[in-house]
Image (tube, rainbow, N blue to C red; front, side, top):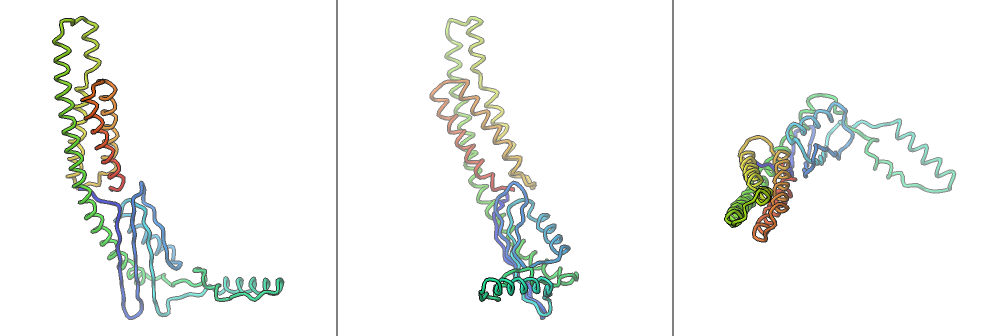
Length: 267
């Protein structure tokens, strides 16, 4: 099963005391990276949110936006506001300016939510869970589309390998049927042998197909296998200098590269 890292979700929670809107956007990344956009939440609440999202989404560059409309849930940072006001007045007096005091409240840490109780944390997490579920639905849907493309590229690559093996066998028959079968000739033929590379590449594609069918997240594993297939195709190209083989070996490399481009967005 292939699961994409791209997804979007929206969650909403509302009762008599609070209205919470959550948006989650997820894109591909090698690790789990969380960027947040909301009023200053308590450290404990933020830890719960980060832990929940990491467990559910595993990997990806995730942007979380939370909008909260709540009664009696705001705390004013009086100390910071007084410091700002003093600085504003000093600037006005020193430079004979008239400043716009409304800009003070563009700083989000002047007003924060009181989120110390577990009940309020659970309300936020309910909205986040709804959004996360939507992200996962979108990830699965996109993963399914990518899986179809994957199967198409793999089918082409397997045909390329079959054609390479067929051409190689015919060329080998020509070489071995010649009268000159000295030791040096035999060594030369052995150096041209690409049977192992073909068999290993086929085995690698079989492993990829098994990984796709598995319930585990296999993006990193498949990416490693594709690197190995790319090495095998390079060896085939360098070993057996034949135009017909080169045609299919290059096609094999192209399909492998297409697969690698897709796998970068897979968990």
